Image (cartoon, rainbow, N blue to C red; front, side, top):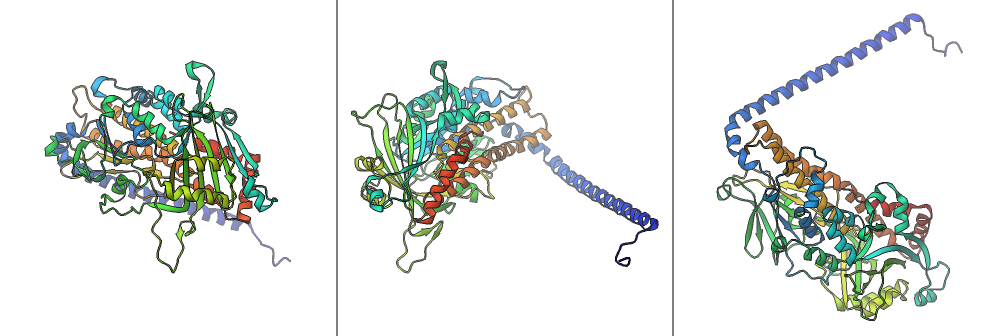
Length: 591
């Protein structure tokens, strides 16, 4: 026993303490040496930078007045929900004031000095207000109210207040024939939006509840509206000088720096279009041109391909959606609110609801059928010995496919056990059908959402920037695509206003650069602000993208165990509050 016990004496303890003390001193000495080396390296670098700046001081001073300028002209590629919202934000005083209200040293000059000229370009031949299906707006409404309270009121009144979301599934222990004929479904969860949002408190209540019309009562910011009606409302309420600058039939095929000589040394960006025309110079080009964005390709690679090939920036989920849209008829009952009802079937589900299309207009009915592509396992295409199947269409332009979709949608719905008492009549009476493949972007990108455009003597500080689906296309299973696009628009507009205000405060009263050091800081400032815009919007959009991907695969679970697991998951999620939390987290605006 005594041999196995450790034996210490006072001398050993003292020696161990001395050894530990020496080790600590050695660590401190090593850290000190590292700090000294870093300091020497930093000073050497600064000396090198000083030498460069000294040799280029004359050049920078000569170019300071031209490069030290606010963003005055912006080209927006794409006139969808994101592009139109950004145009409103950049041309509205309410948004400008909210962006600079927190700054105590704002330089207010008013008039043309703060004006931003906006030009919109769209590859479509015209704005088709009948295209697209329905969207639900929550956090997007909050952003619209920040952009322009009057515009918010127009959009809210165009839609229908969204009151309830329900999820239902067929009972597990019922005969197959009964399930597919009468659609006897049980409710898994029911979400009353007004009550849920009001009880949430915090930022959710603060940002999603406002005073009602004429300042009476409370109004919850949740509405169901047709995509075409939303775009029409946004377009019709643009300032005239901006709406006159919306140009259709313009497909972007190139972005290049303007020649300094042609712009009196001011530089800028030139946009090149498929019809051979060019426009510019612009201080910034914003890509809100959807999932297959040409601007995103430029941000990623510095080039735009014009061979018509599908860009490799998108990921096909292996899930497809068929849409049936039935316009309101004079004999239809007038509704003052909307609800969305989800029905789970075998390896598929449907969604049905009412959507507003304008004041005093009968609402539109829409039904959707979501199912897995049998040629894919998730994002991976099955290997077949037969002829290769053509890559599924994303159909980002919402081209109608009446015959191909209308003839298959009803039969597929019946085969999947989805009830026809609500969804079936909409499909049978619809005159517009669409089919889309569900694509998304990988949120993790080394290229980011912006790229500086330099060359041709252009001093730089001109950027191509992404917003909306061009930046973060996501599956639609949380209904957040349009909401996040509008929030991007508000956030990017405030970033531009903050940059412009920063420039004015950096200028002396005689409109000359304060110093070369100030000029160097300014050249970094816009890059930093755009990165801050990206950071602020990346977190919520990436989170929604991942959750939407998970929900898409869960909700289209295969027949059998996976469908039963899905039904059980939603039942439990509704009971314990998980569904409410997921909805509120996505719906609460973050800008």
